[in-house]
Length: 186
Image (tube, rainbow, N blue to C red):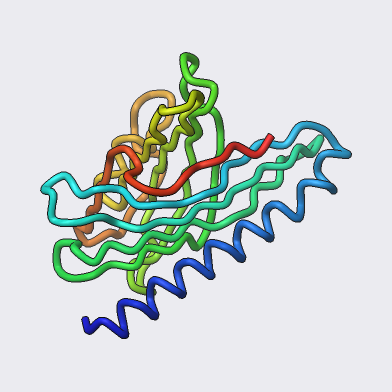
């Protein structure tokens, strides 16, 4: 991938994230009249475990209360130039669930849904993020996709509650943000 193509992808990711964030945040006024909203917006860089570089992501998700069914809207995009098998652009195609997941960390949120890889397929994912609550506290990021996500997307009896025609595709990334910031939307 040449430098110009990389710049165009990075610019596209930044614009996608910005538009998703604006769309999600523009809904807050309408939702706050109905009750408490919950969401997270931001993005940044996550260092790869092997030290070969960083991965860029953007996230904007908001859940609005509704007496019958909560409304979940937003977008998740990740670009990993160092992915196994070549550069990977992961983009959410559907969002299924969003919730606080750690009783000991009120700034931790979990998102599940499906995403495409380089515009192809539909793969389940589980994303856990936590916004640093205090000055100097790092935001954290934990993502599993495809086969790697299935063990975490189980039902109460521990059986996978989703099927995956993933053709053994798996992706995982975890770590603190080296640049960027996550913000809770409440």
